[in-house]
Length: 119
Image (cartoon, rainbow, N blue to C red):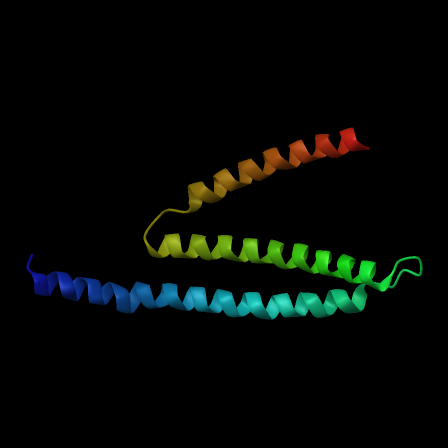
C-alpha cells in the first residue's frame, strides 16, 4: 500500500464517518446549551418563594437545582454521544449498554438500602 492509497482511504473515512462524528458533537453541544437555558428558565419560574427564607437563600436553592438538572442532562447526553461515536468507529456497543444496565441495577439496590438506613 503506497502513500496515495493510504491518503485516499483516510480522506474517505474523514469525509464520511469523521463528518458524522463532528456533526454529532456539534449537535450535542447545541442541544446541551438550549436545554440548559430552558432548565434555568423553568426552574426560576417554578420555584415558589418561601416567606421564611431570604432572597439570597432562594437564589442559592434555585442555582443548586439548575446545576443538578443541567449537569445530569449533560452527562446523559454525552454518554449517548460517546456511544454514537463508538458505533461510528465500529465498536459493538451492545455489551456496553448491557453492562451499564447491570451497573445501574446494582447502584439502584445500593441506593435503596442507603436511603432505608437514613430514614
